Length: 317
Image (cartoon, one colour):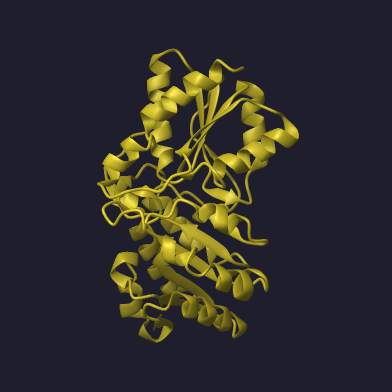
């Protein structure tokens, strides 16, 4: 089987920051806004190089979304930056009314998503943001897996016309995708081929899925791993082609099982090819304070949980 290794770990938010800096050099229409969290969003280099194209809004996220919507009218491509919790739940009305409803070309860039925000605790660990954003008509939802893919996604969404929700995180995670890999919105990436079980994962869980596939291989189980970096629009063909071979599927995400990737996949299967499915996700719960590793283990968002889900779903074929 094909295996993946890494030589470095880096946070995906740095991929966003470096992608934004590159856009600042190549696309004069790109502007950036932040709600008093520029160090956390790694926006410092963009600001140094383009001070006239940066707007510090302060702790006023709703105002930031309104300003971003207005900037698009003049042809600008605004990238907003704050934590995922404040990028979605706190400003849902403004995003719905001022951005999604009118199809404004705003890029909502959200760091510190999910449990891996860590010690800040449940009030900051949003686990329902993918659901909130994917339900908005016309909203593209992207959740890349490592530094390289986050940088590539940041650059790619500047060329996409329409609102985008780009989700990334705080902790350092393995870099295993090629630095020169083209990012295609809505196009899943098959990482391994398999015949016994399909594993589709997004964000930080993609690496865990690869680790799970190695453990399953040692048990004589052939797992096909697919990186779903774009949750909306979903690559339905990639999912259906895979389950046609394997006959069962596991979805893995750092999000509530209600409203996330797993439910989107379940809809595709129910309407095209009903297939046994297991969900690796949080189970309708809030998080708590702890290190990212502690939380991912406690809430079952790791390779071990994916292996168990694969073993379970194979029995249901």
